[in-house]
Image 1 (cartoon, rainbow, N blue to C red):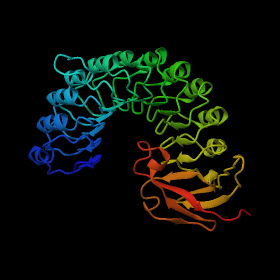
Image 2 (cartoon, helix red, strand yellow):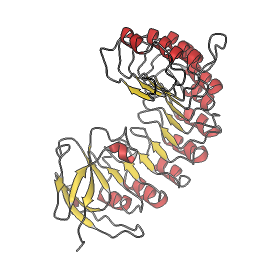
Image 3 (cartoon, rainbow, N blue to C red):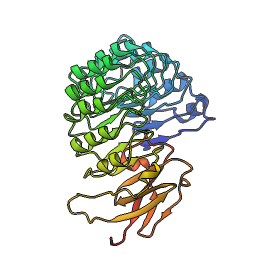
Image 4 (cartoon, rainbow, N blue to C red):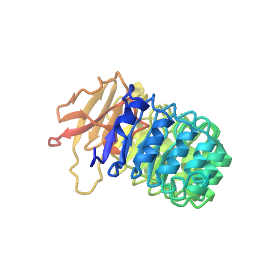
Length: 393
């Protein structure tokens, strides 16, 4: 293993500290990435060996390693000063003390991983606002921070993050104690976020959209799934968010055609929108959305036409240099006229997942969501794109 640069052991459930002990008995200076995700028997003992022998490590994946404790983070903070990316998803024994070690708050014992650029703390249930204070003070170069499902953080914690000038992506999905006040803290700071996810934060509403428009208008991606927003909030946001590329508002049941019309009028750079479960939208609103010139991804799961609307939707293309090609595709009771290369998603069971949809004008093939930079919002839905074209009548 003298020249190995990357080692992936994810999902090796039977791997133990003893096994890793045989592998790491001397320094391996070439190794840059190590993935131990879901190696559930690994403990702090292995992290001690990693910190001792893999000092050149830049990426460490420990998601689901549920036996790791704050002591393990102290060892990482002592030995892995070159670390740039650390994933601690569902390491539920970790607390503010461990994050303090990473952030260099215990310099007498460890320098910390002060060069970290990406930190995933998803589902670390013991973390509180004190962890965010540590992060803001010690990990000043952080670009991506995932705090999804961290129920112990609150609006006050976001005040600590609001002046992290390097931060570009912040995930607060399902952080139950985050409200409009927390979004206000973020917007009034000096953040330059390009991505923000507050999906399933049920205390986030229209006022948050106003704050976002005022102080976070550089966002390229915004996820608000299941938040208590309405057309009024959309109206307050879209006029300042001209660079937005991805908007996820699935299960925002107060959104109507008026909101879609505002989106279509002001968000001309939009390439993807999630409308899953938006049950108050109709054919009229969808036809306005499909006029967006850059739109490539649209999720319409759980949307149903009324009997009076069961005519093909007209999807037009105003994209310069593209031929306007129309395809008729029937998905259950829903009939679309598609313009390539738009992508649509369908709920499980409507169309067998992984199967081709044949049409008289072309063929729809399933695509991987990661190819389009969309991971969380559309999980468990079949995704199709037109891949074979023919002449339009």
